Image 1: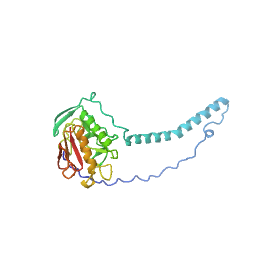
Image 2: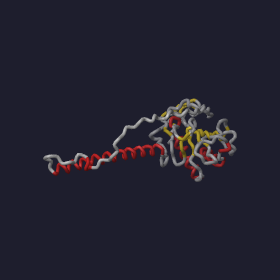
Image 3: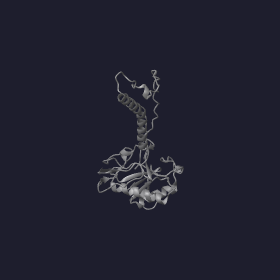
Image 4: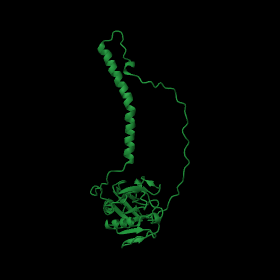
Length: 258
């Protein structure tokens, strides 16, 4: 439930690359007429035409290959940075997850990875204070993953102006101890960060940054989705219906237990 923040260390920038002297290159382009197409003694006309076509083909390959490589790199980078169009509910018949033990002493069998991106959420890595890079700690019981995704969708249907919710940790792939937590061990708990008043897509760092209305709606959405208990911070001044408990170190996020 509580998290111990790791100290962030600012690393000095690396040395710049050396200014190596470039060799002088002849950058003049060759035309097909300059590449091995001069008639030779005894050549037939069809042989000369064949060499001209071969020369044109070689030049086309030289000119188009760099463009193709650059295009491929751009597509790869774009695919890695763009969020998915929508979150698909996992199939629990294919992944019959089983949770054992308690939130503070448990394990997870055949869990599923909570999708990084979806129409209602994005992945938040509190250890590195950035979006993404949290797959290691976002495994959960399949039924819980489905319930949370449905709860987030219901939250946005009721609050269409709200931005996507930052999703934090669930569990490790096989459960057990998770650094920064005293629970999250059996795939049935999840951290969701409170929406910010300034609408920035990151966790709030003070209670003054928390949008209290949207945070209350998010808590209620998790209860409606099946959470039997939700923990929130003692200084987050939102209504506390039954099954909501105030707990230290939760002023920036809710901790939903299923």
